[in-house]
Image (cartoon, rainbow, N blue to C red; front, side):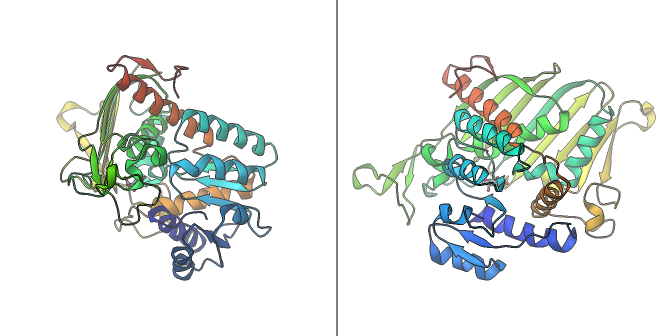
Length: 385
Ligand code: SOE
């Protein structure tokens, strides 16, 4: 694994719990944890039983005892590490968004395709697909239970930047993160919309906003330029993105990704309306899927509150009896288990780097549209950076 912050912790517990709860044919050995800060990496090694510590990712990915590289670093390093690891013959799991630009994502998808010919597998870490209620939604839509899709409504709402004195972390710097709320959390709802509907976003009309344009530098402000020694730096990414979209099946969609939804800590909402029914999901009630069947007689019509904790529901049989529920972290274990199964079975896991590239193209179209006065922008607009 390269990286040891929030995602490093989430992935580490995922590898360990996949081994315990999914009893995979291929058992993950946590061979080496890598990162610039040797002490931070050593702390992670101690806490999660990583066997070795590396401070140079190039040394880590060339170790003969490493078969799979898990990339949990900021987006500006994904392409370099993933392509080198694939070319070194390692399977790769890369955190989302796949990259910071479409150009980088295209290079990664091409490297993944070349490696796939030699049985090397790759996956991008959109873990919310692996929340049982979302996986159930995909099954129902795929079976035609909502019919022809007319609307998708998706929100990802956080509020950790409402305080203007929150520090200028790497997520607020374009050269590190690629974009702000758009790429960090907007990427998730773009992937969820495309995954659950099985359709692709064909064009967008967008607005983005940076409400707070400068912030205090964080303590460890390496690589950050202070404005004339003021101890403050410029925010170079969006705080919020709101956009309209069309899906290639003809549906209309609305998306909202923001870090200024005061009171919403990590609220993800998805609703799909079709000619035969609807599904609705709210991460704040993540073990539930609301299902409406339009064929139900009107006297009994409404949304059914499905408790997605039956052993027959996706992933649940590996965990607890009905009614006990799962949490945020379980998606990371499901991700690890599905990747290990794909490698063992010789199949290509999803979401693939090509799926990650599809998200990147939407992200770029949103930025292009927002920069051009919300002009309607096709997702495959070749001007996307
Ligand atoms: C910060 O917005 C963040 O950690 C995202 O980077 C994750 O992808 C999301 O799952 C939780 O919030």
